[in-house]
Picture 1 (cartoon, rainbow, N blue to C red):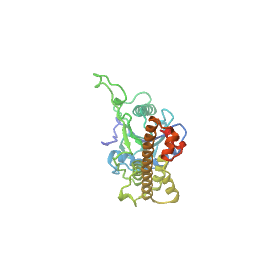
Picture 2: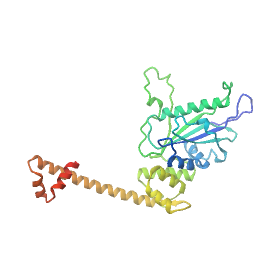
Picture 3: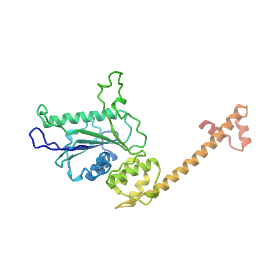
Picture 4: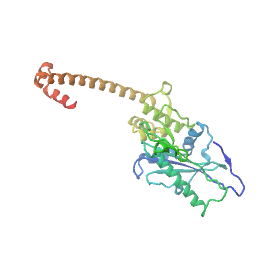
Length: 316
């Protein structure tokens, strides 16, 4: 990323940088994810770490001390269904307008929505800072939006505008492409945030969604705020239990999760065996019925109740 120093010449204006984190979870009213997102991601160290993870692989290029709260009118919600966390980054360097939207479910129209947000933000910035027209040689902050997807299911929606719209042959060169910058926390890719709290949050979500704990993480201690935010996002009750048992400081969580995953796996195996047995029984009963045996006859042969046979046949 290229940094352009503010010029003292009259032909350049000194524009601050703006960062925004958007939290979306259904309706207009703030819910637990909205509230906890503002608490957790709104902390300066956590805030800049998301951008450092995306742009600089966790290197501390952006510093939390340069963050300032920003007037939300610049990027006021287009649809009134989002909660904004807006910060201004101002260190004497010309940076860009960055946006993070924390998304908990797959939205097929996300690429179009983000494009709309950015367009509205640009025009509002222009109207708020210039009377009529942007002066010659004036440079506006670039807007970069990142979608932080915290859901469990695979993101299968469009990541480019060309994947959402029909581009007819011969129009490719005229089409204005728009790319969605997406961070998925349910994949094999591990992001480095350079900040313990956000790194712990990222890793907890990956562990829970993949149901896998690495041996080296068994005794790892996690940030308590990250633990609670992960609970709010995933609704994993084990995380809540651990959070409530530890009132302060970092928390060991992996061994409890590992036991939970193992128990869940064993239950799944037992359920599979049971379903296999029931399927085999159904096939035997159905074959006998097809050959003219009555339910009463089948019950007598296998020493089971007529009711259990009828129940299994109805379930299948």
